[in-house]
Amino acid sequence: MITESVILRVHPGREASPIIARQRGCLTHSLKRGIEDPSTYLLTVEWESLEDHETGFRGSADYQEWRRLLHPFYVELPPVPHYSEVDLAG
Image (cartoon, rainbow, N blue to C red):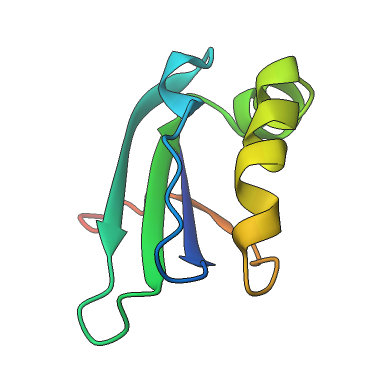
């Protein structure tokens, strides 16, 4: 499982519904608004694999729609790092 975590800085008052839930390999996602800075959002997406995000979603027509809806409202394009689980027991 791969976790994508990105902080989205958007212009205040601009909101869009995520279309990510219907993507192949998307296990779960959440969107949280910043408390100290309400113009920031933390989007966390758990993917079955990195390819599901990088190739599947980013190569889809849905991603073009995502870009059309959201990218104009970003203050800046965010980095999108990916993380994998660490075995803390061993």
